[in-house]
Image (cartoon, rainbow, N blue to C red; front, side):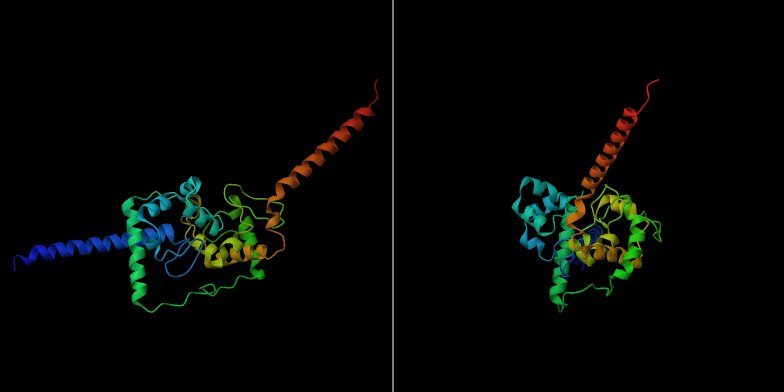
Length: 269
């Protein structure tokens, strides 16, 4: 009986260690990865991560998760291919240790095992919430985007950091991406995932303690969807700068002409 006690203690220790590692991996996945990736639920912003540990080596995964853009700039063919296939949206760098990344991969492996042991569910073909993104909600989304209406939890309007080409004269912020083509690139599920669980540090800070309500997210997505359905809008997104240059040139020319006329007609006393 005495000899069995140390073995039981060791077994209990490793069992608790395994549970803690799995919980850490799940927490890190939800905090770091879930905004852009799923496991067995299809592509979101980035690829479905089911079986990723079989397709890529552990060293490559560590380097890619730490800084995907560093691998892209180095010309790594796999990293470049992923970047191009997913609309050239850069994955944010992650300051995670090898142990933390291993725990995330362990969580993916455990999720794969659980999925294999149960009957596979059909992949969703529409928005899993059944929400409708319609033209009727676009004005509400536009009001929230530009700050005409306030977000319920006090979040700053989107225009502080982003801009969209929706024929508005207000322009927008330049701190973050132009969102004119957001719906085309990400789809409703991708946008919703990012707004619910931002993967970008600046956005995380902006929305900390200011989580958007479901109806606000639906309105914002409806705005992006309406812009994507407007012919030629996305292609014209980069013409704003040229327009303002032309206006500035015309104004300068107008002022010069008036100065010339005034000086030409002045009377010398």
